[in-house]
Structures are given as structure tokens and as C-alpha cells.
Length: 280
Image (cartoon, rainbow, N blue to C red; front, side):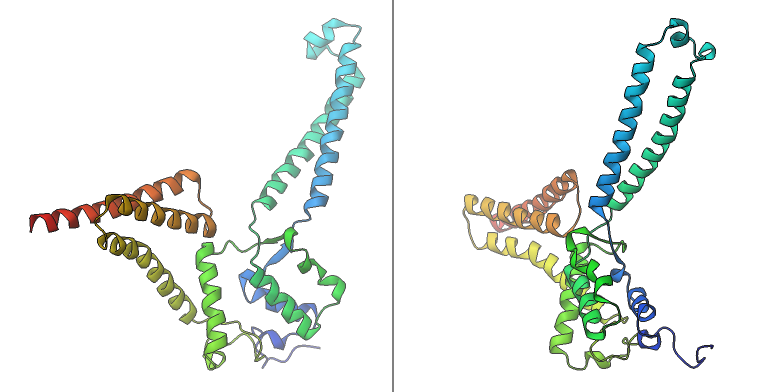
């Protein structure tokens, strides 16, 4: 039986209830690409593969120590010890498997953790629709083992984006009626694809950045004490670096450079204003 050609297959509710509809929901937003790392199982397999190589390595050492013909140890072309060749072949296979597995684990460990908001959104949808069996949705409860496949934006942008969307849902009653809600007919499902949230998020972040620069300057203008000004600059730096470290993945050197630049800007502005007031 062929599907109705009039159906809009980009709308979640047009898919049959079950995995087809849940897959459509996950595909509607890259933030919903959440899966388990299976960290304990991967660690177990890694340890077993590692131990297998260690055992083979010990056997190779024993064969070398028990070698009756020293010539075989110094000239591989003349080596006719079949046990050593067999162990070396097994080691080659085991090491290739081990190296490939280590690289795969590294890729998994580099994945970021999903936000609690996205996990809750999927859980709420599943609880409300009963689209899947509970045993098959239990993976979302393992929050410490979950990974997000979405490269996403800076975590600060993602956080502000979520806060703006939550505020619109709560306080702007007409938000659900905007044209950007085209991927779901369910009045309780918000899959907004318009530009409003992005614009408001950028405005909020720009305002925050502006405040981080203006407030310390205004506070320094309010006092003539050098010690208090230094304390204000220090506190402003701590606030900036804490925000950067909390909401973005920066290296220590990048944080140091950002702090030095921020301090330099504050000092230049204050010194220029001080020299201007003195000349007058």
C-alpha cells in the first residue's frame, strides 16, 4: 500500500506512530540526535583487547628466552621458529584491531554531552505519545552516558537560545501560531524553524557582552581610588573568564589571552578618560 501523495512528509504527525514518527521527530532538529556511548562496555572491551595483547607479548618473550638457536634472534630471514612466527602474526592482527578500537573510542569520547533540555524534550514527547515501549526509551534516563551527535553552536548560544524559546512559549501566547511552526501539528510540540529566536538570542548575547564592558567602566568612573578601580577590573575579568570557561570549550591559553585583552581595553579606556579630564 502506497502512502497518500497529499501527505506532507516533513510533518512529524504524518508518520505512523512508533519508530517512524519518533525518527521524524529526531530528524526535525539536530539537537535531538542523542545516543548512548556505552562507556562501561567500551571500557570492558578495551581492557580485554589490551590484556590479549599483553598475553601474546609475554608468550613472545618466553619464546625468545627459550630460543635454542641465537642466530634466529639476530637474523629474521633465517628464523625458522614456527611458534614465533605464529605469535607475531597473532600480535599483528590483535594490534590492528586494538588500534582501530582505540581510534573509535577517541571519536566517541570527543562527542559532547546533550543538554538536559533536549533530553527532557524527547522524554516528554515519548511519555505524551507512548510511541515506543518503555524499555526501548530507557536509554534517555542514562544521562551520564549520553552523547550528542550535533556539533551545535557555542554552548552559550545554545543556552540563550533555549532560554529565549522557553520565555516565548511561556509569555508569548501567539508564539505557536507563528509561521515557523511547520514541522508539527501538535499544539504541545514546539519545533520552531523561523529566525525570531536566533535574532533575539543574538540580541541578548550582544547586550550581555556590552554590559560586561560598560558596567566595569561606569563603576570605575564612579570612584577615584586606584585600589578600587583595580579591584573592579579584577572582578570583571573573573566574571568574564568564568562565563567563557562555563559556556565554551576554551584552552587555558585562550582564556588567558581573552582576559589580558579585556583588561587592556578597560585600562586604555580608563587611562584615556583620566588624561582627558586632567587636561581640562
